[in-house]
Length: 73
Image 1 (cartoon, one colour):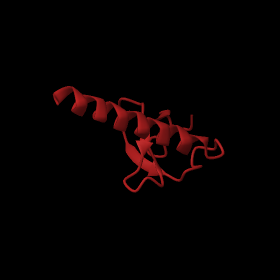
Image 2 (cartoon, rainbow, N blue to C red; image 1 turned 120 degrees about the vertical axis):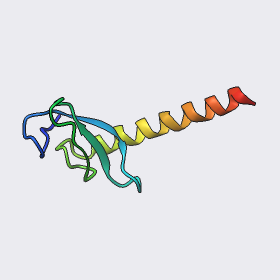
Image 3 (cartoon, helix red, strand yellow; image 1 turned 90 degrees about the vertical axis):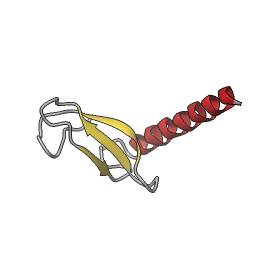
Image 4 (cartoon, rainbow, N blue to C red; image 1 turned 180 degrees about the vertical axis):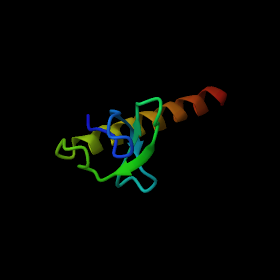
């Protein structure tokens, strides 16, 4: 993982895709920072694989939401 651009020490955790699905939303794991921001699909130096991971996380979240809706029916 890359380092946070805000504090320059914390490691970044991928949260999912950004608002339009074309960026990767990340969060700094340094408890003193905790910055959240979006980076380009290849913004962490993994050749775009970070975007694939973010997209998969979004798809899993959508499936979980659908399962929860089915449980209420």
